[in-house]
Length: 473
Ligand code: AMP
Ligand code: ZN
Image: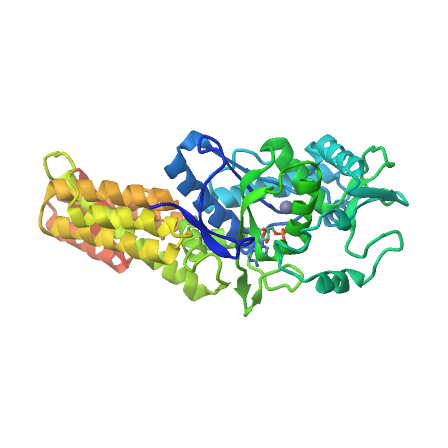
């Protein structure tokens, strides 16, 4: 089974082959950091994190280099800093750490590189200079523009016909553009805005060149996989490609272009400008990060996905089912002599089916179905009191879960996560009192405490290692 990925350029699913299996490279366009990010912004984070994990499994952990950038030069950032009367860097640092904390809570591994525009300025200026040298860019009125005419394939990635490109670009066309499709590589800053030195006067870069230069600096061009949301295909990725090729790289730029569909809310793309947003930061107050991650992966990544409470509730109960099995198998095994794990054949097949589904263009709905089949096998082993199969099956379930970024919590604490700190403290106190009553052979008191716990919706399980508890389903 080989990895197959849907490539936007080919408009088809193709077998994935990296240029160098010893160094597989992936770049994903990241956020502009001026506010808390909404859960839609985290769809690409979670989707490409999953791909990163699959690549690491297939090629080895050290063989995959993943970079996801941060845009820290932008009008919205400037405005936020001015509104608050603080330096720009304070805004970008604040929201970058919030973003990284949210991403970690959603189970995303940190990328190998997280380049920032402000730390890539020399590379950006250098790349623009190369484009000018190659007659693919020209300076005009303090700006530098990309000369679209220099790239015969312009429009190929987005599949937009030339007329559409011109018609689209004609809206509000600047007088210094030679061709309406030309786009800004460098522009003068407005008074009070941050600026950097360049051969064309002080100013700041255009959006598209930032990504091309960051890729060149941290990964080297061409790369194997370039990702982002569908909204970035045009103009952002189309322009990145044009610049990258004209700056002296092979036609390839990126071997595979991958794009995730939108996360919608109220049937429309979740976006700050429409106001239909749910912030990851807020959702994480109510839900475990794994449940939000599951919800984001509940549909295939190229389809649109509607964000609503039932989606998260279903995700949470799917995880409850899996954690219930893990909790039960732990308890079963703790009362049995140790044995070498030997998963059943059906468990091994279900485990393989998880990876196979992911290798088929990240088919997460199928991967989830296979995870449940695997959990059923573990359950069957407990029922049959087959220690070796239970142990082996549990290890496979944990491994398949980890491959997808799930089941990392201790099963006990997963269920206790439903309890707030006050309830937890109360339950612990009641359990202690019950233990004392039992030690004193005061059975009526022990029973009374047990019913009190039941009334709190707490289930107590007496095991060889003492009593444990969980919130009932
Ligand atoms: P932005 O901060 O809007 O540039 O977006 C950062 C990343 O999130 C880009 O890859 C976007 O394509 C992606 N994105 C933004 N909004 C959504 C959404 N509602 N659904 C899915 N992806 C999104
Ligand atoms: Zn980008």
